Amino acid sequence: MSARRSAVVVGSGGREHALARALAACGADVVVTPGNPGMPDTLNGASITCDAREASDLEADLFVIGPEVPLVEGLADQLRDMGRLVVGPGAQGAQVEGSKAFMKELLRDAHVPTAAFWSVSTVEEAEEVLSTLSPPYVIKTDGLAAGKGVLVTLDRAEALRDVEEKLSGRSFGAAGSTVVIEEGLEGPECSLIALCDGTTAVPCAPAQDFKRLLDEDEGPNTGGMGAYSPMPDVDDVLTKELMEVAVLPTLKELKARGIDYRGVLYAGLMLTKTGPKVIEFNVRFGDPETQVILPRFKNDLFDVLRGVASGQIAEIPEFRDERAVTVVLAAANYPGTPVLGAEIRGLASNGQLAEPIEGVTVFHAGTTRVAPQGPFLVNGGRVLAVTGVGATLEEARAKAYRGASSIEFEGMQRRNDIAARAAKEEGHR
Ligand code: AMP
Ligand code: GLY
Image 1 (cartoon, rainbow, N blue to C red):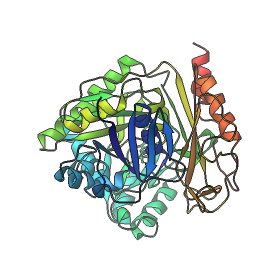
Image 2 (cartoon, rainbow, N blue to C red):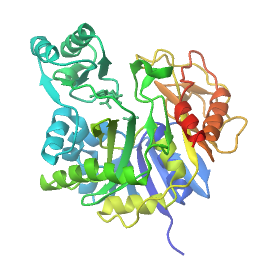
Image 3 (cartoon, rainbow, N blue to C red):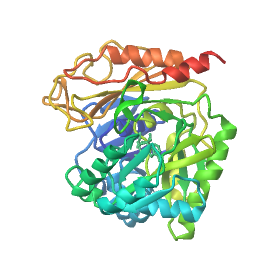
């Protein structure tokens, strides 16, 4: 009999919950650090537990680091130095997400198409750059800002006010001490999440994320309010092209710079009239994209990720034909400082729906519990992601919304149009 497999997942959000469930579904016992009280469960005889200790104090066959912050801080290096198998780049590779200026230079050297950009550190410089551009104007912080450091606007005065606000350090601290102004791109967006083993990269199914808070893409940018996968418009041929245009040259350039990149390269792409362009690269799985990608993952995720960590991807990921849609339930005032503490109704003690729906999974992100069996309470900006899986996008969407509608808490925010357009398009084919 072979020994049981084990994995540690670092993080506490919906993405990490999806990773933990997918790893447990292929028979690995998973410890999530720190995790959240909605995660513990038993699937297929494998356990998901949470542990407050540091990853470096835990042992497992495989370590998967979810969020960007520990990656940028060098957790993958630290664990590798201890002899652990790790999915996630070291601190040097994580600069791809940690610094927009680093990423932009890398893309330039790799000849990857991206928006033109200017780094500025004074309002006067910004004024000069903006006067040469036409709308939409795009203003970003240079450092990490949890997906919330971006303003896209048609109004130049608003763009300038935003530069001033970011440079002042009031909203983003040191992450805003350099501001990046970008050429505004237009077209559908696509998240392409690729798994890299240092030398080669293989794609996951494309997903689309909904970044704005409100329906019809109104309101401020968030970390993501929902997602669906696959994208009807992005078939295997286009996926291959996106890998060749965006991901593979970037990985090659990283290697040329002596960076052994083992982990996720997530290309945020815009499919413009003049071809695909990279908006950004992230160094981790997307959140909430992971909540629609992994439920369709056909291979043994543990084996594939072990290949990533050990520098030898042996299988190309395949995805089930089903569609997946996820709807994020966010706290009052998100993406500003969220209002915490509201009681969440509609969940059973195991964190799933009190009245289960076939094909619906609840992923916990910002939840907590005061007593071990007590009610779940709101404890973060994005609280839950409810994923529905079905034969068509319409069916997956209907399930996700049925699940989402059976959950309630005070001040809950959600979008009602996640995957609506794509489901309609798919229905017309
Ligand atoms: P980012 O955090 O860089 O992914 O940006 C968040 C969102 O802002 C993206 O998903 C786009 O919707 C939008 N955005 C970012 N950069 C651009 C750009 N150059 N042109 C148009 N929209 C952009
Ligand atoms: N959903 C966007 C991100 O993970 O950055």
